[in-house]
Length: 104
Image (cartoon, rainbow, N blue to C red; front, side, top):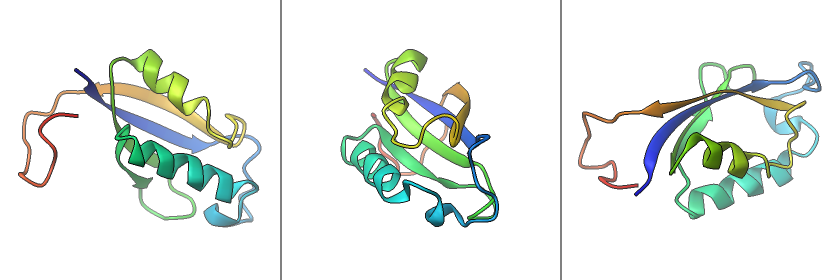
């Protein structure tokens, strides 16, 4: 059985702040990678927090461990120099809407 994790990702040193998020080099490959993680059921929710172009990204993922989370994200075509994984935190879900899956 998988658990939930909150993952915070932020600009790395290779991020070009003069360009919008979707104009960064390799956006299409990154987006396809992330879409595949959603299709696999690994990413449950995800997206920028605050401003779409300058905010950190927050992901809710379902995985067996932090090591699995980091290993899956290591395959992202956007390297850590472009999008850094700042935090991976276990998340204990105590409240849940019927719209949210009961088991990852």
